[in-house]
Amino acid sequence: MRRASRVTLKFATNLKRKHIAALLEAYRAAVNFYIRILWNEGGSLNKETLAKLEHTRLSERYKSQALKQAIEIVNSTRKSAQALGREPSQPIFKGSAVLDAKFVSIEEGRASFDLVIRLSCLNIGHKIIIPTRRTTHLNKLLSQPGAVLVQGCALSENGIILWVELPDLPFKREGRVLAIDIGVNKLISDSEGNHYGKEFKKIRDKINRRKPGSKGRQRAFRERENFINRCLNQLPWAFIYALGVEALHDMKRGKKKGRGKKFRKAIAPWTYRRVLERAGQKAEQNRVLFVAVPAAYTSQECPDCGWCDKENRKGENFRCTHCARTGDADTIGAMNVLARTLETLGSVESPRL
Image 1 (cartoon, one colour):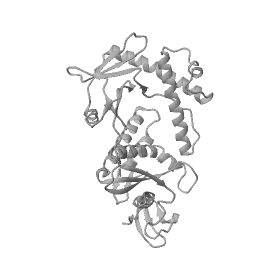
Image 2 (tube, one colour):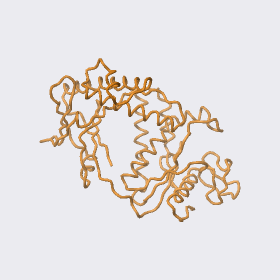
Image 3 (cartoon, one colour):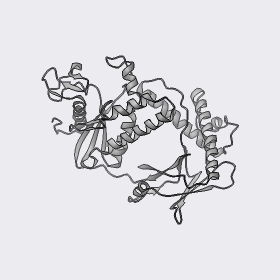
């Protein structure tokens, strides 16, 4: 299991920062060049594709790394679009350069700096030395038994992300099973009737109000990311051995009732996939089994009598038209996810409250 931790670049001199900026400019240009080639003409990690980039300050090693990252970006973009049932659009790379041990070495530091990062840059016969300090988070990761600091990083102008390799641990065998439902107003509702992130509507609406590409929108995205993490941290990870979630598809598609332009605009900043990814990572970190179950009709089925009817749900409220069971619609959805999770696990435990 690999975990990430960010360290600062503030101890690098202005000259070293200029070297890093020049490297990132050339590297991003190379990645975007290869993305265009792969998107329009196809290609792979071979000499023919590599040779198409002629005018660059990058070494052959850096060109190869840029092509490798471009392939990963193209593949993940198409995979995500397929999962959402959407037509993929050509991505534009503006992110961090993912570099391995061919370009980066990390050593123990001295005096006030406990880490030294050596980085290969452009037109320099040696690696530049970047002193930095471990963060509390990084120290916590490295203190775990069997933890190894990976020789590599994700480089940006604002910091360096380091990785720590942790040994895979067996899943828990004790605890209870919990299921969650992810919503557009309350971010997370669990099968025990708890709600996390009731303020999520304010955050997604804030993103919609910000101009695309603006700094304000980027700040709103970061706020959303932090909000997701805080909500997931509140789940009772220490007391559960399995977490059930919906394997949800096509949330942004279709012309069903209530799924018009207003609905699609509201959930545009609602990255369901990101919540699932972070929940899966948290489950792995806590040795909790992560179970994805079919999502069909979880918000329309009554957990008491099993009656399924689209009229059962009215917005945030649930009322069974057969047995008159009432409740919060998201909680009911989570209860039905729990029932399917227990069925998947082969349990006879009752999911009813």
